Length: 90
Image (cartoon, rainbow, N blue to C red; front, side, top):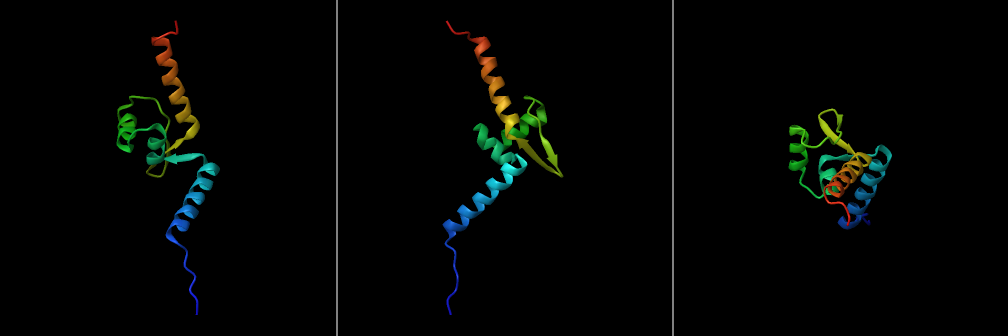
């Protein structure tokens, strides 16, 4: 009798592919994923939301905070625009 065994690395790749497929379908990122996308910690992103430091829209799904990638891109672009207006090219 042979047992089918899927190596852990393959299971991880399958889960990652399924997560990516689900994200692309819904377009929503978890707080941890959104924070990684921005290069900050999830705690920093949560604090920004709580303190209203930056106007990054949050989609509430039950008690979970989700973020649209398009909103994160708009936030990043707004920060670049703000920096350019402070330091115009010579």
